[in-house]
Amino acid sequence: MIILDNLSKTFIKDGNRIEVLRNLKLEVKKGDSLAVLGVSGAGKSTLIHILGTLDHPTSGMLLIGGNNVFEWGEKKIASFRNRTIGFVFQFNNLLPEFTALENAMMPALISGLAKKQAADKAFQLLRDVGLEHRVKHKPGELSGGEQQRVAIARSLVMEPEILLADEPTGNLDTETGKKIEDILIHLNKEKKITLVVVTHNKLLADRMSKRIGLRDGEIYDIQ
Image (cartoon, rainbow, N blue to C red):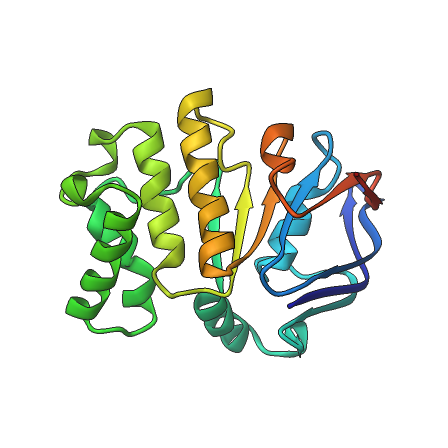
């Protein structure tokens, strides 16, 4: 499903080259779950942004479903991303002026889906994460855990094959974080969604089928 081949990312800051990722090689098979661990500044978020086609590598190749995605133009990449990849971030990025239902249906509307169909899909997903009684509430009226569940519903509304989560429990208390973990694990095991999670949470990482670490921009295996 996902293959990295000698993928590198370099930034130039104040005339200095900063090698954030160095010649990464990685394969994530369809239906796998992968945890990416490492200290702050190790390149984890840069990696997940590249996996999600939100950022481009400096060199090397990313294949998703056999597609060399960075050979495409930006419009095609954006369309592919909308259809294929869902995102859950530490900060849920919900739009405060919209309800839970409206936030969850947003990617479907952007893709051109009819409003009723988008709303039906979003409602079903909100019901799946236990929020059918909160669909008319705006983010400011929801708890942190409820907001993150809305973000998960939003990430799934286009039925993506891949779900990328960057510190999805980082802002939550232990009990609420465990509920979010359970949802992610269920999606991976029951719906066979390929799951990649960046996390500092070793308990969450231990629930993944594979774990890797990032150190100085390079991958190392974690048993």
